[in-house]
Image 1 (cartoon, rainbow, N blue to C red):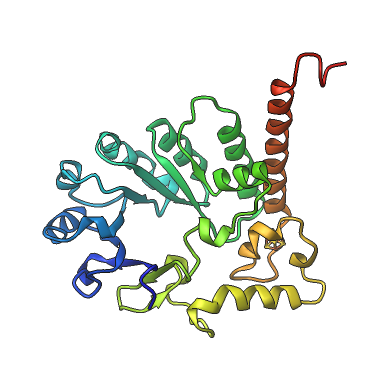
Image 2: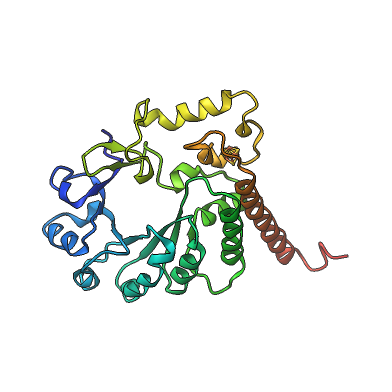
Length: 277
Ligand code: SF4
């Protein structure tokens, strides 16, 4: 095991992973506070708790500024629970991880209004959800009051702006060369959505082998996709037959917005008279 890997573990395994860089999770926020007493918090990248977590008082008043990732399971039902955490942002960075499922855009709006960062968690969104994604992208790109990132929209937009691809597997914290998810049974896998999935290849080479399979696939959609350099087939898992029309529309929207911004900035910085007819 490489020491540079970050392990996402249940708090009950804290002793076994002492000395590693960690994300620590629990359904019970007060248990995290208790069990981390005496541990080197420098090694904890962030805590992960469900937004439905029971007793949050001890976490709200915890003196250590370790970032917190609030996990949403059901966007429509969990939405109002976000308000319980509104005071937390003053003490530590807060991010909301929300699945792209019906109602997720309301969670994004509320999270941003509470000044929380957002991470969108994907499977393979259908047409209605990709429409909702486009609306969220527009909100992120054009709403001047938004001051926190919405991932992966933020990183993809920057990648297009800089002309420097960014690997979506890394942005989504699903690159096993950097991060591992340890299930409640102690099984090492890629991320929460891979829990219970039997992977036939070794974890470190999973993405490489997966990508190779996609590229070799005759007539495969990834073969001539202009977004492959960043996406790396991310949306072809778990079903390779998933059609990416909606996702590609989202990438296109981000690319166009980045190009518009570049054009605006270059015209702004041009000497007087240049770029003007
Ligand atoms: S958007 Fe779809 S087709 Fe394009 S690289 Fe990603 S998974 Fe492949």
